[in-house]
Length: 369
Image (cartoon, rainbow, N blue to C red; front, side):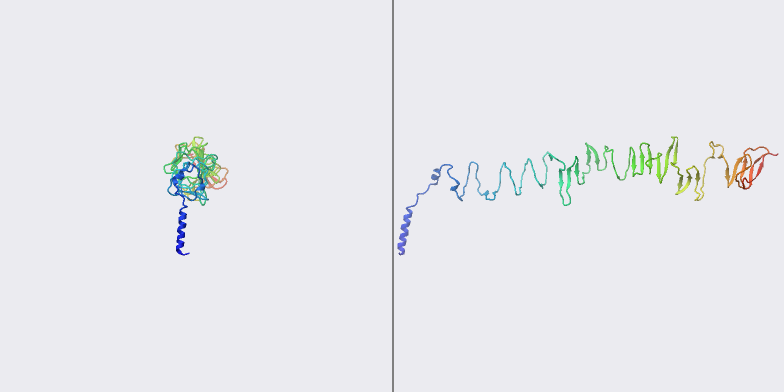
């Protein structure tokens, strides 16, 4: 078959097919003939519907905003007034606004908190051990409620000029205790400018004031005078005697020394013997600016020295008697003054030879007979 015949056959076939074309379809007329709600999803595949609306949906978007896959529904922006069912979020949530939550239950909270509401933080149920915790690499800092008290594991520092108060009464500020603080168990204080103590006082278990007896003891808990100083078993007391005179000395059977330059100058033995000066040192000078009486209860005011008994001058005895001694040890130069002088008798007797009783001669005949 030549080319002319082929062209003629194709032209005849085209004319035959044109005779078979259906008449043009009027879409509006066709849609009007479809009953309402008679189409199903099976009539649409891969097409795009614009300006779609239904009883529960109004679509006015001009670009895709909602994507549904087998794994998730992706929404670019979600604007809802209420989520009425339980929801689980497995990613981060950023809220650029106010989140009003009636009950917030979290396992871990990380936030920069600025509380502007008037209500306080409230713990319900068992509150023991609840409060604020700061975890760190070494230990957890705490400010919590524990057994009817607030426990803090760290120092609490208040601002200058502020104070701690109880029942609106100052207890402590930066520089002073409140006047309501009347009891304390202080163990150490710095320098005191003034101290007023009412009642018993003990300092280092060494200085003791007995408020019941108004006595002060150093080294003793039971002072035996207004002031008692005890050391090495010896107690020095100073106070009054029978409310009529002052008293100073030792309380027990102990000697008493009065010292200067760490040398005893006056030595009083427990039996009452008194030593003026120190036998191991150079002799001292004793001056009596007044009258001196020895063994005299009522001294004679007309004499400077009143002695009731024998005396010695430079080791020589002088005493009064009615006669020369008949017994006892005497030394040469001792003198017995006659206690019963009379005309014809002697002023006294002098020992001219030591012995018992020694040799005695009278001297100083009285009168001219």
